[in-house]
Image (tube, helix red, strand yellow):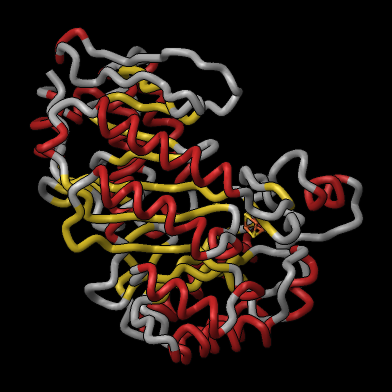
Amino acid sequence: MVHLPDDSLGIYVHVPYCIKKCRYCDFVSFEKVPQDEYFYGIAEDIKYAASKLCDRSRYYVDSLFFGGGTPSLANAAQLGIVLDALRKNFEMRDPEMTIEVNPETVTVEKAAEIKVLGFNRISMGVQSLNDKVLAGMGRVHDADRARLAYRVLRDAGFDNINLDLIFGAPEQDLRVWQETLREVLDMRPEHISFYSLQLEEGTPLYRDYTDGKVDLPSWEENRAMYHAAAEALKDAGYHHYEVSNAALPGFECRHNLKYWNMQPYLGFGVSAHSFINGCRGEADYSGSDKDVCGSRPDRSDECRFAAGKHGMFGLGPESESDLKGDFVFTKLRLLDGFRLSDYSRMFGSDFCSDFAAVLPELLKDSMLQLIGDVLRFTPEGLDNTNPVMGRLIEALEKPEL
Ligand code: SF4
């Protein structure tokens, strides 16, 4: 029997509209003006999901995250439609309320509107403070626009701001990256996310790269940028708590921690994911009116959800092996790692036995370290997170490896 923590609930709302598609982006987003119907549809899905949520009184919402796309492109009325539905259908307990914003959309009026709606955390996609790098990624804003947007948000009273940064981008070397880092650290946002640029198949950047029209930093340069960021953040007093995330103490992102701690969340809107009662689902907006349910034989009807008329989400039960894989994939991203005893408590089995096929080698190769009961990445392992996690998952799939 798998024991999952289910107490507080996170809610994610996907807003799939952008001013212009960035050259590296493969998120679900469209160059379109936000449509009222989309927000009314989400409101209906919220009502429907709440009515189908078994044992609803058990849950309370303590984090909301509007992501995208560019949620700040939606107007206050559209965002309000969704917030009203959430407040009417779920119990809220002092939620962290995050909205992602693009600097180009931030005006004094927009910042005030977002504040009045109740958002108390901003996540702004700055990515770089170098105009050449921004242009290479096809961002719609330049560095000055991002600087101005930050000041506007501060002036509007936001005291919990995340800035997203990207390294390993075209036109970027270690020096250029460190200039951005220095300036961002001087701005003193409460939270900084720093992601390596992912070259996603099908994007214009991918095509230019494979055609030899664009150059990217080498793997060694990319890793030097990552470690330079980790060091600079630590020196500036930030808590580097997840592979790509750091925060001033007390400002770790409550919502994203739910993903990394396997706590329940519901996602609304196109491509949004949900995870609750050991069932995982993805929103399906293929337009059908299907009735997709997930149920675990060992938990009666707890997981049963039906897709709403907007094709809300089909939640399917995860096998125990999938859940173990999720545990490794999510918890290892936290730099503090996890306790093997937590794994045993959740799954009733021994981590070292379940991963006996690969664990000794990963420890010997200094990819992972085991200190007492705690397993976590080494600094070397942080350069190889995907291969290491891949090996662990493989061991679950083929224990005889
Ligand atoms: S703003 Fe974000 S979601 Fe929109 S196109 Fe750029 S990377 Fe993609």
